[in-house]
Image (cartoon, rainbow, N blue to C red; front, side):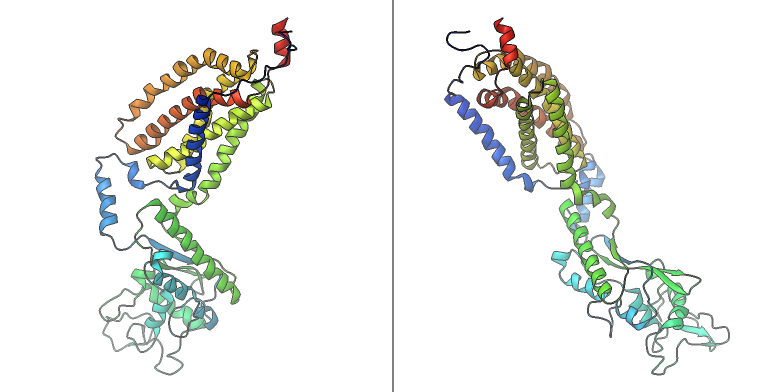
Length: 449
């Protein structure tokens, strides 16, 4: 019994001072700002950051952005199984006279007209349309030896070379069935020359996969180019828009009786694929980290659920504020920064757990007194043993020549330590003095005895 207060009951909390209110207001303001810019943090990694400041490759990347008028090539691949030998199948993919208005080539061409939105810069190169132009009897491209029926290049002057198809109404039609497959290998082996610029060997030898000894066509692609892409956001948007176009082509072909998928491919897709799920990965990894911290804290704090919750809430504030720092300091969200954010969860535990533990074991009468005792006993250890010791290793990173070390390690680690120290030594004690867990009655009775 202390005065008229029963043992084990906490003294009513003292009214917070104006300084406490000001501290909470500052941290809440910073948190609100960080939440406001949370969705403005850029996703991706600028490839030039992987080079030292004085690398010649940096000048190369700068020249690419300044002088090029076309972006990376993109291939719209139609999977194996489509019937190219029938008129219906040809109309679903070709882009010339008589083809469907929503054919594969026509949809890519339409997308190129909206290049600022679709990131498709040019009309596609269509092997099937060039093949039709090459094989028609009005041209001098498709010729065979009269006696052997072997291919005769347009540059060859030989009376034995005759047109592949006759100058009849039927011969002027598109080749179908066996005729289509008969002349296609010739087209793909023909080199362009002054008399025939439609030869497909240079442009399409890898675009068409011929199967079963020349009796069927496998997977094929139709190539075009993206617009000039400079930033990670441009590359990610170009990949998303290309997939959107390919999905629309697939859906249109399926409505017309096809059942084969069209998908886009470009050389940079493999590097930017990760950024399509970066937000989900970030939420998952940080959520798992906070959940693990909460479970461990509950056990180490003696099943103090409320104390563990307050500690995890403070760590979550530090993470949100890290995103605010990333936006202010031009740090993008990618695999490197995500690893650093997960690390900041663990480092933040060092700043918060000791103060929280000291508060829960304190037997002082009020929350304010317990917060003061926790800060007086553990504050110096947290400041000198955790905060100052990390600065030595962090400052060295500021002088690194690599931009990745400067941005993703020096800046982020510095932000981790500063935010962790201010939240652990200033905000957390104030928060505990307001809404900290009540005094443990068993500890209080033991102290009174």
